[in-house]
Length: 129
Image (tube, rainbow, N blue to C red):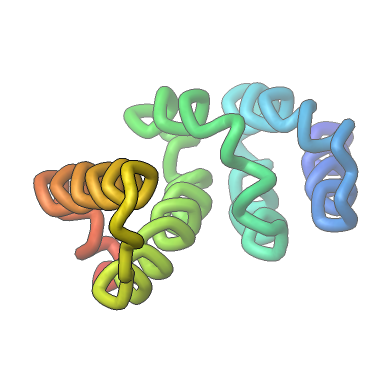
C-alpha cells in the first residue's frame, strides 16, 4: 500500500508542477521495479502529467524497457516522441529562412534534424499512437 501511495502522490505533485516531485521520478521507477503492483498506477497517473516533466529521465526510462516494469513507461516515451515529432512535421515544410549566415545555420540545423528524423523514422511515431 505504501509504495502505491508514494507513486500516486509524487505523480499528483508532478501534475501540479512540483519540481521537487519531478526530481524524485527515478524513485518512482525504483518502486515500480520492486513493487510490480504499482506499474498500473504509474501508467494511469503519468498519462495526466505533462510529458515535458519526464524529459530529464528519458535515459532511465529507456534503460528499463527490457524489464517487466518497462511497459509502464512506454506511453510516456511515446508522448515525449510525439511532442517533438508532430510540431516538427507540421512546421518544417513552411519554414522560410532569412538569407543571412544565421539563417543558413538554422536551415542547416533543421536539415540535420530532418535527416535524423527520417533515418530513424521518428516522423512515423505519430502513426503508431
